[in-house]
Length: 576
Image (cartoon, rainbow, N blue to C red):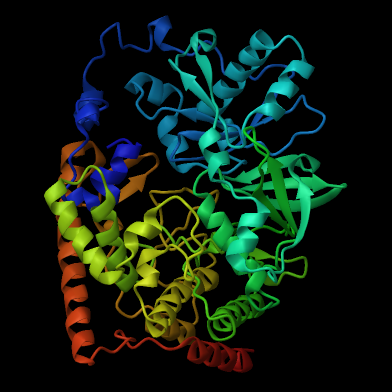
């Protein structure tokens, strides 16, 4: 089965148990059975037909644009205009519809772009090179000179889009439509509004102007590497969901400092909006840690036999201390614990980043968090029948009575953020869920891999893991016992039934050439139906025992963060 955004609802998310495509999309881009590929293609669809081939993917001799990365499951591409002397962080990304004919998907490698996001591999894909060629034509055709383009670029609303319409193999036939994101600038808030919400004594960082920033590289859908007065910084901004940006800003400015937690923001970045006189907060800056994330560092060190036990223990202890600090001293929770959000300082100490508190991918959290997240996903997905979604909305209201207000796009200064599953948990339950995720991260650290799954659907890595949690190969026995305790209650995952192989979803139980897309969807439906049933049973038991005052908030009897720290330090003292 091919990878597309529809595969999320039909296979990857628990919505697969009830999925009904929206009426307007039915019959469009139905995934093809693998048997279809064995049929003799007609001349109309044959790659021998010149109209079905890309004339060239060679980059222009002097390219005007660069593609830095990808998000949106292969529909959003970060692009940078190279011909400007100063590049403000406008985040005017390129958007490509997921609804493309099979020939275009294959030739432009859209299935690969679904899971390939990094700047090392993505620019080599056909779609990235195609985008550069399309933008080259658009820029030289629609703008008489650099100055006119620069005036246009600096004048559009922050987060505006370049939408490729009528995507074709012929770059001259593709239309580039500018989507002005006035809606985002309307939702951005001025400093005065946040000051009213947070109080006059709130410790705001220094305020600087948006156009004082010069983009060096776009690292992520929310992160740019920028120059300010010839100094490198990270610029954090969101082109959707601005409420998470303001929640993170408030959190980072108020948590008690810790050496292994990102420091409070250095600057607030404001931009004058196109309508009215509002000068809104578009983002903030933090320190740039050039050594990168543990996700990339661990497999590289392991490949070169440079992953030392002393470093593994140091990082594990630092991470656990930081989590305990956040829990005990700052009274907050950290639902985003994964290797992508752990960077290395210049002294090779870990630093935790990303405090939006959105959480990790579906299935990557603790089972008790997943149970509530499954309810949330089914309750709010448009492709789930209304009678079913209403049942789950009622369940969600019981768990988080104010959930509708938290789903609103506006920033309302909620005390505990917007993460419904974590808000539904008590402080003890939150700690137990953090310990679960910590256990999976410890497994990655001691195995030296980039993630807990061999081929995660959401993202592929430059160095893919060669084993899957909870298999052990390099982890010391004492640490295996600790990790198993941390991850008590773990359940089997979708990867036991359906996996990503290269850029397709296939069943684990049959040869790839002997299965159809319908069989993949049916297997996913059965898997998720069983998982949802277990989730409902767990939540019903929790509710019943809570009403009686008999619920054990540490239901799976995991160790506390303090106990994990003690076990790590004891092993550190014993290690040779």
